[in-house]
Length: 155
Image (cartoon, rainbow, N blue to C red; front, side, top):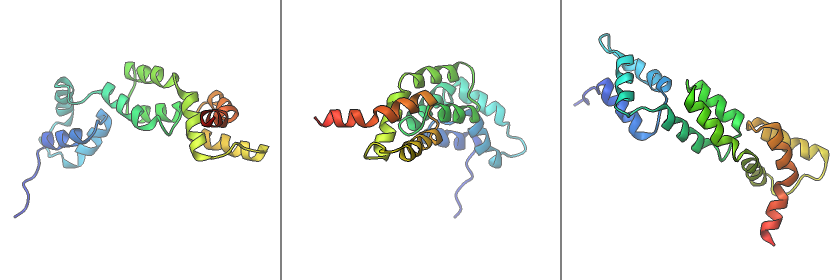
C-alpha cells in the first residue's frame, strides 16, 4: 500500500526538524511538491510567525557548522547565497570577526603537520587558507604563528 502524500506544511516541518533552513532554501525544497492551490509564501510566513523558521537561528547554525573549517569570506558568501541579509548577516559578521585568526591557525596546523621550510611551501599554505575563505590578515598571521603554538603547547 503506498504511503499517503505529505502535505506541504508537514513536509516543511519535517525539513525543519532535521536542521535549520533559510527561507530561500526551504522554498526551493518545497516548490516541486506544491500543488496548484498551495501558497508557499503564505506557508513560509506562517512558519516565521510561529518561530519554526528563523534567519537568525539559520545563520548561527551555518556559522557553527562552518567556522571550524572555513574563513569569514566563505561563510559570509554562503549566508548571502541563502538570502540572509540585514541584522542576521551583521550579527554573523561580528561573531566571525572575533576568532578568524585563531581558526586559520587551527585549520593550517591540522592540514600541515610541520611549518613550511621554504617560500614554495609557505605559498602552498597561503593558497590553502585563501581557498578556504580566510582574510589576507588572518592568513599572514596564521602562516607565521600556527606551528609556534603547537610546539609551545607540547612543552
